[in-house]
Amino acid sequence: MKKGLLLISLLLCALCGAYAQYDVHFTHYWNMQNFYNPAGAGATKKMHIFASYSNQMSGFENNPKSMVFSLDAPLTMLKGDHSVGLGILNDQAGMFTNQHLFLNYAYAMRLLGGRLAMGAQVGLLNEKFDPSGIILGGESNDPAFPTSTVNGNKMNFGAGALFQHEYFQAGFAALHINAPLIYLGEKNQMQIDPFYNFFAEGNIPLKNPLLSIQPSVQLMTDLVAYRADFTAKGSYTFNNRKFFGGVTYSPSTSVAMFLGLELMNVTLSYGYELFTSGVGASHGNHDIYLGYDFDFDIFKKGKNKHNSIRVLQ
Image 1 (cartoon, rainbow, N blue to C red):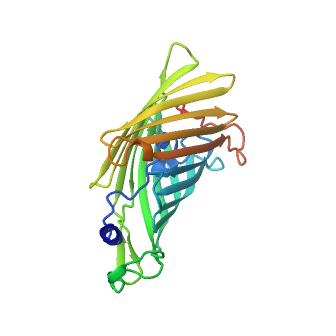
Image 2: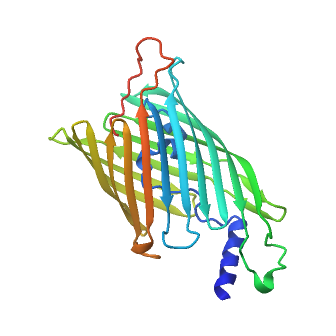
Image 3: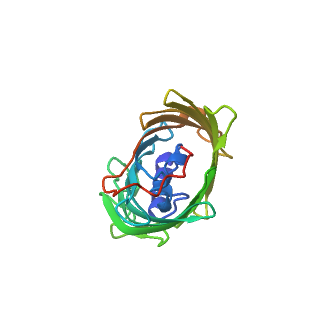
C-alpha cells in the first residue's frame, strides 16, 4: 500500500509539472542533430533519414520507451543554402505519453572557412495521461486525480545555431523557449521548461587513412537538472564499408557502448547504456539507430555549388 501511495504521489507531482528533465536522451545523439538542434537540418547536405528507438530501464514493468523518426534535406531549388527538416517523437513512460511533432528550417552562410547555420523550429506537443489499471484504494474519490484519460496540447518553438568546419563542428540550441503550459483535463497541468543543449564533435584523421577518431560531447539542461555525455568514437573503412564503435561516459549517471556499420548509405548501430548508480547495470537502456543518406538533387539545375564540407560521418 505504501508503494502504491508513493507512486500516486509521484504521478501527481508529474501532472503538476515537476519533471526534472523532459527531453529524451538517445545514445546515438551525435548522428541526430535534426532532432536536437533546428540548425541541424541540412547539415549533411544530403537527404538524411533516420529512426531511433530507446528501451530505457529494461526489465521494469511500464518502463520508458521512446522512438523518433526524422528527415531533413537541403532545398536545392532555392538560391542560397536553405534546408528543412521534420520529425516526430513518441515517448511513453508508464501512464504518460508524450508526442512531439516538429518542423525545422535552417539558413547557412560561409564564415571563417566553414559553414554557419541558423535554425528555427515550430512544433506541437501533445501530452496524454491514462490512469486505467490504477487502484487508488481509500483515495479513489480524490478530485485531484483523474479517473479517465486526459490529454492536452500546445504549440512549441525553438532555435539553434550550428558551425561546421573541416575538422570539427559545434552547435547550441534552445527548445521549448515559449515554456508551453499544457492543461490535462480541467484540474491538472504540465509546465514544460525551456531546454538547452550544446554539442561539439571533432574529426581526427590518423596516419592510416582507413582509420579515424571522432570525439564528441553533448551537454543537456533545463537549468534544474543537467546531463553531460563524453563520447570517444572510432571508425575503420574497408571496401566501401565503415565499421565504427565507441564508448560514452556520463558523469554520475552511466557508461554506454555502441557498435555499428555503414554500408551503401545505410547506417545501423546498437548501443547499450548501463547505469553506474541507482538501478544498476542490469536494467540499462537499449538503443537502436537506423539511418539512410542520399543525394537530394531532384530540383537541381546544373551543378550544385554548395558542396558538403562535413566529413564527420
